[in-house]
Length: 208
Image (cartoon, rainbow, N blue to C red; front, top):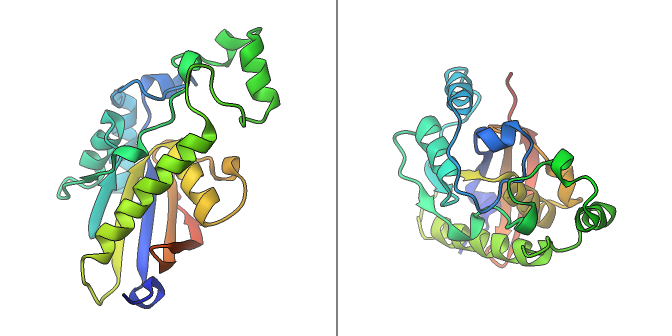
């Protein structure tokens, strides 16, 4: 198999549109919440402004907010579902925001650890990173099977946590370096091989 650098594979990583819980800054993980009307409208406006590149293939988390985002931004593409890209399980913090968690010793301990501790009754970052990487490998195998010699662009409709996990793993830096708002993300280039992939040339998806 040729190196991806020769084939010029671009990745378009997009965080799903805003939901009611996102608007209220609540931990939204395993709850399968839909986009809000505000979220749908914002995506439609961004799409009209043409801030999102066209894609040849589209991959998505299985969660409703991601699939709805995919449908708004790329209505002509049937997304390939990557189950491992579901958002992190926030355990007992699910559905709550910072104000509601103030005074909770378990939450303060998690904050003091810079998010390194596992979520109480939820998922550890180590386990989350592991499954995100497994999903990324699935996508790479799918792209490698396409046998295309020309440049291709793959879209990824994912969660904020999934994006932070994959970019810190394959581009470098810290997990929280890659926080983006709903509907935003990165355009980047894929290099290397399946067993040693590298994400390079990050460019933020801009727009109001």
